[in-house]
Amino acid sequence: MEDKKVIFSGVQPTGCITLGNYLGALKNWVELQNDYNCLFSVVDLHSITVRQDPVQLRKRCVDFLIQYLACGIDGESNIVYFQSHVPQHAELSWILNCYTYLGELSRMTQFKDKSAKHENNINAGLFTYPVLMASDILLYQTDLVPVGHDQLQHLELTRDIAIRFNHIYGDTFKVPEPYVVKSGAKRIMSLQNPTSKMSKSDPNENGYISILDTPDAILRKIKRAVTDSGSTIKFEEGRDGINNLISIYSAVTDKSVSEVEAEFDSKGYGDFKLAVAEAVIEHLRPVRERYEDLKKNKDYIEKIYSEGAQRAAYIAQKTLSKVHRRIGYVDRKYIKK
Ligand code: TRP
Image (cartoon, rainbow, N blue to C red):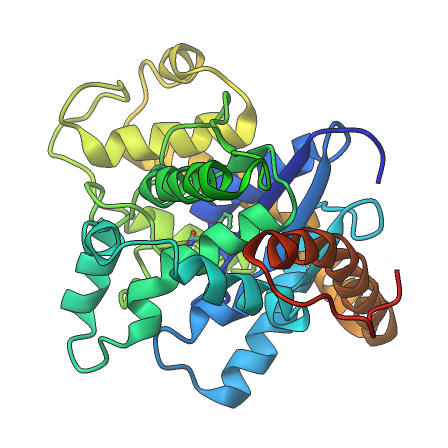
């Protein structure tokens, strides 16, 4: 790989890719891909911490990868792959489990939330999930990790694990930094419950927009979006519903909040919602079109993820071999150097 900084990010193949994921993550990845060496993984190992239907999972994994590409991620200049195709993730994860404390893992808020939500399946994987995430990141000597707010605690733990390991064995891992995106950094909230994040696992599908939703569906969901009883299009404390629509409109049109306020100065919610819907539809149209095209090209998709996995495994193995040496494992003579 060229001598650029390394970025790693991943999305779990659960639910669907929402407008929130797109504006908060994928769209920014596209902007970063020329300036960094990027790895974008569909993190399917993480996804089985919650029970998945095998047929659905296999389909969704491929579908997510296609959507990465449809959003504009170049599958040839970046490494785009399925986490389960690179066994080094699971291997390093076991090792790092032995350098992570139960106390640290029990403080993770995502673990607490998810175990409350899935109380019949509080499995060990759910608990050690952050260690697998640390392995994803540390395997590639990652410099920067673009993550949402909800993942900062996991990233902090990743840094602690790396520092701890380096301290015991000498420099082994690069200690990664979170990459906080400048533009569009506002969180996109649920359309039905604008105080919580737009979530791809929201049981109410009016709460989120999938990037593959039809224009009709987008229009319907935005028309139904919850707003307050006011009437002005102003970004103000406490007006979560209208603020969220302003954020969405501003992100897809690249206009600032004050430009949006000025544009809708004498207009009401009805007009504004129509404009938001129209802008979102136009913004997502090319994504949906590319998705339909790519979906027909199975050979190309297989080539992208197969080559992606091989390139990822090559880099990952270098780190893993170093870790093995540091810990004191016997060299694997059968691995060709
Ligand atoms: N835990 C992340 C999430 O739910 C997904 C993820 C797994 C990830 N491994 C990662 C994100 C490594 C960034 C880097 O959003």
